Image (cartoon, rainbow, N blue to C red; front, side, top):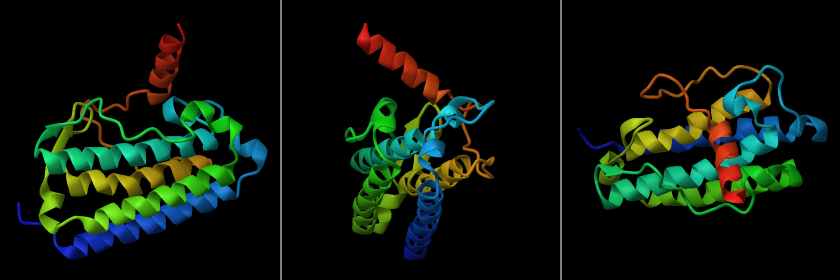
Length: 189
């Protein structure tokens, strides 16, 4: 595969900025009650409140960066189970915090992520990492998840179906919300 050109990196950063701005605007427009409500008839991640979705995005931002770092260190790395550094407000604690606190954290995290992306030599974007859920992706493909994930959750926060649906190898998204609930129960017992 030929190297990704600088224009691809520039497009990545531009799309990340656009989608993050849209997400933050949608989140900051919510009333306190709406930020804590669960949509009726929702399933999976859509059952998360807006605050939980913001915390989830923060956690996933760190995971995507961790996966990219693993690919850079070891081309073809298996990253199942690899998570980024824990965040100050995990999903389980999101309800106790304001949307303003969560959006401020997302802004600060994105600044660090942008710095990381800008620091990468172009050949690093070609390196690969794999998961059972998504298969093998290049660093550039993992990083494109930032703006796609923001678009997905911005739509959910705004109360509409997202035009973006992740491509899971098995064809169906794992119920991350239920997996999280189950993991929390196991650690308490």
